[in-house]
Image 1 (tube, rainbow, N blue to C red):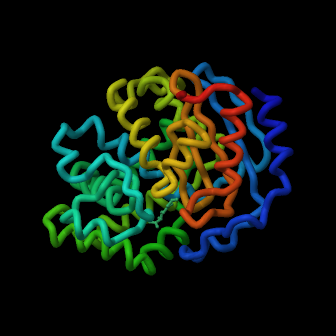
Image 2 (image 1 turned 90 degrees about the vertical axis):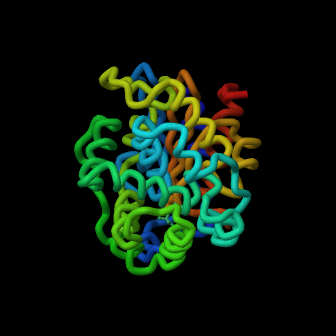
Length: 302
Ligand code: DON
């Protein structure tokens, strides 16, 4: 596996200029497009790292997997009355579908769906920011994981479309908290900075039937691990989820910071970071890297 990763890394090491670094959150625009890192963590604890794997970056929408898995054990089937589990076929921040569908977001990974999940978490955790950081740190087995206040402040100040999504859902009765308060939590969790090494480690519970292999603790039930992986497969890349499934064949989740994490159930988590995005908001080189990885390794979920 290490040789495959080295080969893929050298294939794409010079491949920049294909996409565009996210700039609608101002501090993200300053990130060098040449950053490139790949990290693998197996459920047995084997680690493979290459490139800028020690450099923390903005995990953005990858945090939506943490919020969903944090909420999952605390709610029953009624959660699916507030948020769907179908691919949206729309952009991650689309407003149109949400109005047609009466304020019920298609899935928990588009922004509207993630805002509903954060709203529900805020009802359950009086100090949600601290609880979420503690949750992610335990999954990663490391304490040095933080919010980036500049990134969170910028998104909080400029994220009119996300606020519109939340207000629209509130108008339909599908949002309980104060929009400004819940949106602040949302900006904070999107601003979490992690390295690919930490991300790969933090996602291994999803490859391990919900158990964190670092400490043997149950994070979520095997049923919920299966379910979250399924939603990642069908919805993790918004209106590019079908193409990602076709090319890579793994459940995964992207963020506009250029990160992607993917899971081989029963085996490993792999995290890639490369900031240039395609028009769907997903990392160009990240997807190519993962497509080559599953092809060369000969293992995917299919
Ligand atoms: O809400 C936003 O627009 C960002 N905080 C997160 C979007 C994102 O990462 C989409 N993923 N590729």
